[in-house]
Image (cartoon, rainbow, N blue to C red; front, side):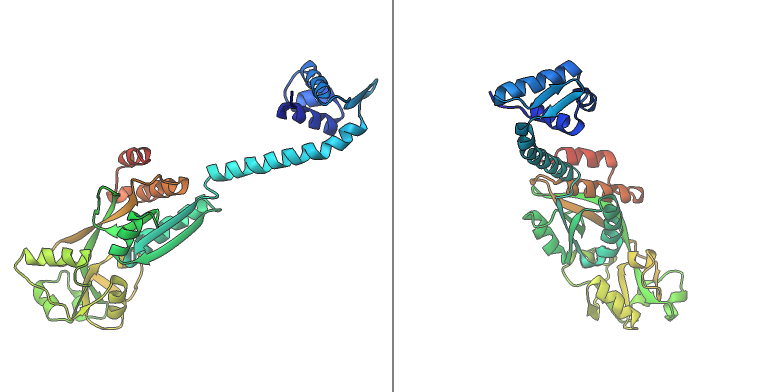
Length: 311
């Protein structure tokens, strides 16, 4: 018969407290139970561990020799329990997030701020890229979560809608157009026009809206959203762009103006639904969707169903 962990725990406690009665209180067992466990341990080992005296127990040389080995066992158990707690709380998990550049400020920055406050031990990697890169990387599992425009759901990807992004005309506040309540097509076509790059989801959304009115837009400059904002800030034309950077308080020297055309795009969070989500990934996805819930984002009940169905 081998010594049990419980018997070693009682032995260790008696060595620390010097009393079976104190050990019984510490380990929430009866005194006869604690005494019986010590007696069985002595029988298994084959040597007495304590001398029974009128005033209590006195450890034998064998007990003194055994204690350091028992302490090492329980130190290991304490380390293992801390490891388990850390894993359960996500401490050893790793969260990888990728978004298209223009979504970093509006979607990633505020949610990661809250997430790190809730999980101060979190290890997070954040990257930006083009939409095709974000989709491809999430599909192969290189990133847990991606932020894109559109709802690129597939057999591999789950897309959770977060917020509708309005497209408006972005001009400098010192532009003659800034005083207008609404811009029409003539206002737009008389200026140096900046649009998102050809072939991108954002550019296609703008083109579809204008083509429905029989209008073909030919920009003089094509750029990413951030680059377009920088160009406009420096006096290089106007743009029909995502206006969330202005509505969120960035680019103080610019204003967004409504146009006669209602243009909006859907912002979404994507993840690979065929890969088991880590603790951190589930926590972050739920945080993001709750954060944008009041902005007509994903229904929280639908979110829970999706997360519960994850492999």
